[in-house]
Image 1 (cartoon, rainbow, N blue to C red):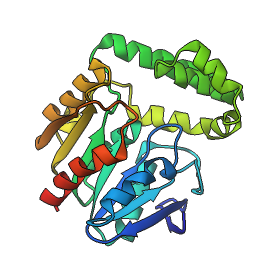
Image 2 (spheres, helix red, strand yellow):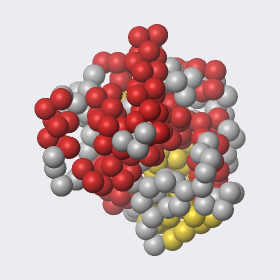
Image 3 (cartoon, rainbow, N blue to C red):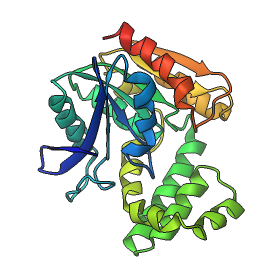
Length: 261
């Protein structure tokens, strides 16, 4: 990240900008930094000015207590100002939930696209999210970042043997370092259910995408997002999973953002 802008509360937000054209800001999900979504900048950079950034509490960005989702929306507002006062947003997973909240908050946006925001569709899913929130909160409060990461990996459906393998891998210290930000993503998910009333307040076009090889509930959640937004569109990418290929995703995003630029 080679640039920084200050959010409303004084938190420095690190970002990088590549390409030329209308601005698109890329928003990463849990356990990730701007580097996770930065590969999209290559295939989009010939038509757009693409911004990737480290969300607060991770990477090269700062953090200021107390946390609130509204502070992350203000981070996006600062980035929009930094790129000229108007932009489109793309967010993946829980980063998509942040994008949708930013759009509902009235930021000066042209359009927003999200990929597989893991919203629950029923009370069973909401109860799983509530249990995760309780376990995560306790682990972080008690200074057990490794356990917090484990709870998150279980929430994603990762098998126990793979979780233990990750815990014994060289990447684990880095995962523990970013573990406190899991509480931020959990807050962004706001209980986990599809926020239909909040989505109804979005006044710009919304593209909600899912992978054809992802679990059915993720595809249905993506469809529910599109149906709840007044200008929502649903799109499925054949053969893709939650770990979507940037080269498969970029043409879909480019077509949507060009149409709404």
